[in-house]
Length: 339
Image (cartoon, rainbow, N blue to C red; front, side):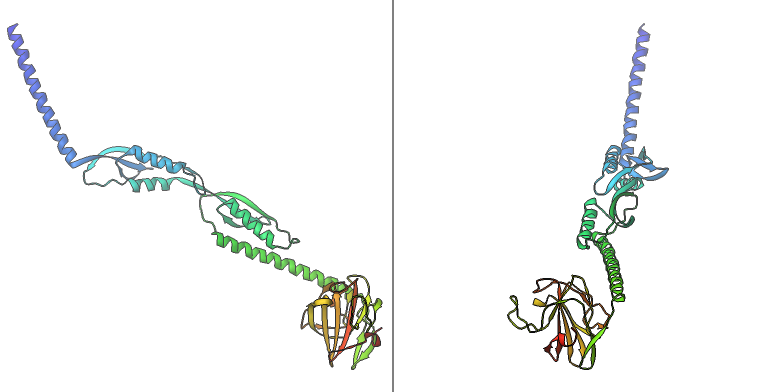
């Protein structure tokens, strides 16, 4: 028994000594390892190594925050391939590459953007960042267009991976060009309609020469009832009447008493809408109180050219034509030559 106890004591002592030696050796080896190396996570994506990071959990939180961020025009993001991590010992001097790895993972995610397209007549004309921008642009277009111009405008919400849109300034320029085209089309159609109506009026109007002055053959500008003669005075007129008033319905076409050149075509005080035509040899004719003017200054007109329409603008008590004939600026009595 004594021998057995001594044997156990001996081998226990030797085992303890061996374990101490192993522990010391292990500690020495680990010390050497940690002096030269450090732990790091090697990150790979779809089989491609991206770099090394120190903290796997911290990187995963940043990536998740990026995926869930839908600020601005981002509709959603999706990470199709998840990164893989492998713990390794790397050289103590090797730098961690957290930012590089984070950006590489973020770039691999699919990002879908929400944009708003402005359509005119069903065709996309421009895209902007917000629905409010699109609404404002359409409202501004409508405000600047004639109420008779139809603007078939709309807004479509779109999703795209390629976030390339016009700046607000570029979008405004695009819509302004469309607006100007709409105005031009409308004005062209309006002018063509006016010319067609004028042509129809002219084609049914018979011009008859009824007198001459300074060698110029004259024709009546309209037919109607004389309501105020040359030289007359009235309740609304203190001075002598310098022309002849011929009453007829509003819109009746007016033609010049002779061919000539338009020297005035605009509103003028008590005359209301006034057209003046110069016929040469010092002869001029005045057509006042018109409801419409169809000619412009400098335009050449013939006896059958419709220059205006009967109205009651200016100092007037009812629809009629105030006609004046002047020679070198002096008023003449139109009745002596026309009526």
